[in-house]
Image (cartoon, rainbow, N blue to C red; front, side, top):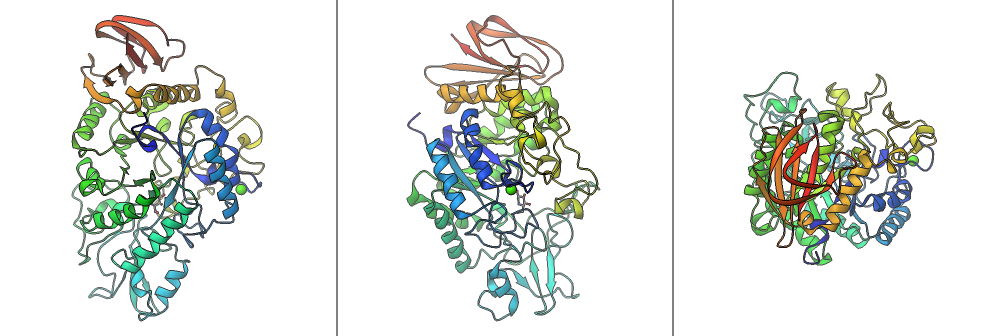
Length: 527
Ligand code: NOJ
Ligand code: CA
């Protein structure tokens, strides 16, 4: 596997820092907490840790509102503790990926204070200021992703500023070369400190229509859906000039060697793959969230994988995601049994998988009692908040699940006394053991890590089957999305079960036909 870079054959693990491990008893996770759990990540078998934002921030959007791009918020620790994290990660051969939030800063960033101070301020054009519309209202019909108008009037200077998210998150003007330069310096600051790459927040948003045209109404809008869906985001995002911006970021990373640029992109497959950029000058991994957005049904998933594989540009490396801090937990969406085949799917498809902390122990939906909601989106549009997927990691059956000595900032899942890392570690039938075995298989079998992919006839409508192969090895993955047992024909030859979602089946020989339990997945190897 020496011919491929680490981010192709490796696996990314997302840490939401507030919820991973608290070390100073304030109920919020911190950097020393992540460092303390690196041994766990190495034991689990992932290759890289992506840490959601840790920069100084008023925390209006829990760190996605950055007040200083080159510092660490005291809540999370210090730069020295960050350096220690990098050093300790390196000792364990783990990579560290930072979240980079270039689309908007915090309203508390000194750049915005300057920009807002006067129309003539040299930083005025660092943000997006427009005169009121003809009726004195907002300049156009763009809506905030968190509901409500995307424009806020600054009374003192008589202009509106644009914010794709909260009022406290003014959008930077990426058409301004000075903004690009400043942001490139930010990337260099962290690259020099040793980070291995960036996950770029809402990368498809960075450039907006030069004419600020109104977005067209969305004919498919269903009442009750977030307000942002009332319009098609035709002019506020995914503009052609974005590719130049991303190529600029790539140019900054290039001299540093094998660093990865991951882009957060919620777009349909055809648009998503454009973010590899002309001649692959774009993101190394345009985040592929399609599994999150596709019905959990064998045929739909098989069709999706085929469509994505076919759409990839020559040389573009695929990737897959099942969950993140903005999406309902996979176990909440499909249930515990199907979450096991989801794990097998994620870790056997072709391309880099990203795991979301807690999914490996099957964390589900955590109901948030009234009064404990934290996410500002929940305040703006009740029911759409993301707290249920951001609850603390459950390490053991001690106080607060080993997460903190204090009451955690968000509640634990009610099943924490039994659903925790310690309890699952030595249980051969646990979700954690399944994840760990899958990660080990990916390491040991080039067919899984870097091999080719082909879909195969499953033999039943509720089954998805495919092969991963190199010149030396053929592995067949068979996933039962249904609730009924299946008996499926197998191609001639002897097959060995490398792993099943059902404990105790590994090592069995299979011939001619394969029996599957409800919601069982297996990985077979042709002898
Ligand atoms: C996407 C992030 O993942 C989300 O958590 C955040 O609220 C928005 N971008 C705004 O930065
Ligand atoms: Ca803390």
